[in-house]
Length: 444
Length: 162
Image 1 (cartoon, rainbow over the protein chains, first blue to last red):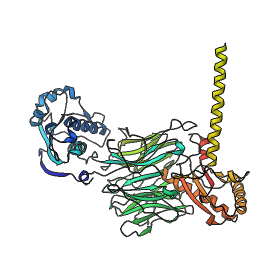
Image 2 (cartoon, each protein chain N blue to C red):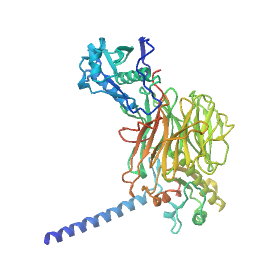
Image 3 (cartoon, rainbow over the protein chains, first blue to last red):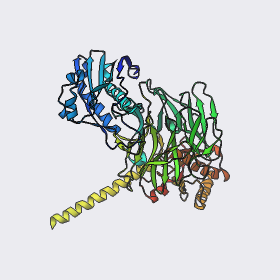
C-alpha cells in the first residue's frame, strides 16, 4: 500500500520553454469543441514482469489516458485506427504532417521499460500545429502501479494544457448499496476515480453512511450504526483498523476532517437537538462549536480552516450558514426560494456547493461564500451530497430514482458534473452507490 | 374446453399457494424480534404486545410536532407502559426520502425525542426510553408517493431488546 501511495519520481526531464503559440485549453467555460488529441500506444521496450505478461500494457495505458481525457469533456481522443506512425518512431520524432492529416492538435507518445520490480515510463506531449514538443517527463514505479501511471500522465497533460491541476490520480470513497429499498445493505467502498480497483472496506453487517477522506487520503471518517449505536468512526485504510471517535450518549453524525487533518468536525444529537462539535484526534479534546435549539449539521471547513459552512433550520427551514471556526459570527447566506442542504466548501476557497430543494425537485448548485452568484448546475428527482474534485472544477454527487409502490425501479448512482454545468456523466460502479467523496491528488 | 378448464384450475391452485405463502411469510416475520445485522427488526412493537395501542405516530413534512392523534396514541402507550413496568422501549425516528441524508438523521432524532418527551410527561421514566434515528434509511413503505412518504415520517415505539 505504501508503494502505491508513494511513487518515486526519479527525474523530471525538462519542460518545453516556448512561451507562445502553443495549445491552451480553457476549463472555465463549457467546452463545446473539445481539443482533438491523439494518444499513441506507449511503446514497450521490454516486459519481464510476471504480472504484466498477459496485458498489452502500452496500449492499455494509452486507452486509460484516452478515457480520462474524454471524460474531462475538454478533449476529443481520436480513433487509433487512423494513426499512421508506429509508437516507437512517433515517440522519437513524430511526422507532424501525418498527425495534422487526421486533425490531431496534440499528440501523446510514450515508452515503457518493465523489469521484474521496476516500471520506467517516459512520455511526451507534442503540439502538432506548432510542430513542437510541449512536455517530456519520465518516472519509475512498481509494475502493479501501471494504471496509476496512466492517471499521472493524464494529470501532467491536463495541467500543461489547461494550466490547472488535474484530478485523475485520485480515488472515490462511497457507500455501495444492495438489496430492497427498505432493507438496504450498505458497505464502504473505495475505487479509482475511473471506477477501476473497487475494494470494500466493511462487510455490510451494519449500516454505514457518509465516508470522507482525510487530507492525506489514508484515513476515512464515516458514520456507522454498529450495534445500533449511530456514531462517527475513523478508519485507517492501510491497516483496516476502525475506532469510534464520537462516542457520546446520543448520536454523532455528519463527520468531516479539518483541512489540516487534525480534527473531525461533526454533529452531535441529544435530546432532540443537533449541534456542531469538533474532536481533536491527538488530544481527544472535544469542543462545542454551535449552541442552538435548532438542527445544526453538515459542517464543512473552508480550505484555510478559518471558516465553517453548515446547514441549520434555525430560520424554520434548512438554510446554509457560515461562521468562524470557533463558532462566532454566524451568518445566514442562503435567501433564495426553496431550502438548502449539504454545503461543501470548494478546495479553491471561493465557492460553496450545495443541494437545493425547490418545488419537489432537487438541484446541485454552487454559490460564492457570501451566498451571492447562485448557479444551479443540475436538476433531478433526487440528488444530493456534492463533493469537489481536488482542483475544484468538477463535482461528484449521487442520485436516487423514483420507485414504484413496492420499491421497484429504485436505484442509487454516482454522477459528476463540471462547475460550468456541462459534461454531466454517470460514474459506473459495480453496485448501486451513494455518498461519494473525492480524495485529493494521490501524488503531488 | 377441457384444457381451458384445467388451466383455470391450475391458476387457482397457484394463486392459493401464493396467498398461503404470503401469510406464512408474514407470520414468521412477526414472531422474530432480534437484532439482525444493524437493524432492530422492530416486529415486537407496542402494537403487537397490546391490542388497541398503535405503535407509531406520524409527522408532517420537515416537522416534529405531535398531532392530536399522535398525542392520543402516545397517551395509550404511556398507560400500557405504566402497567408493564419491566418493559423498556426504543423510539425509532424516521423521515421520508425527500430530504438530505444528514439533515434527516437529525430530524429523525428530533421526532423520536418529541415522542419520548410526551411519554415522559405521562409519567414514564426517561431511563426506560432510548432513542435512535434512522433518518431516511429504513422506510416502511418503499414507494415514492405522498402516501409512502407520510407513512415513513414516523416515530415507532419498539420494545427494547434484553
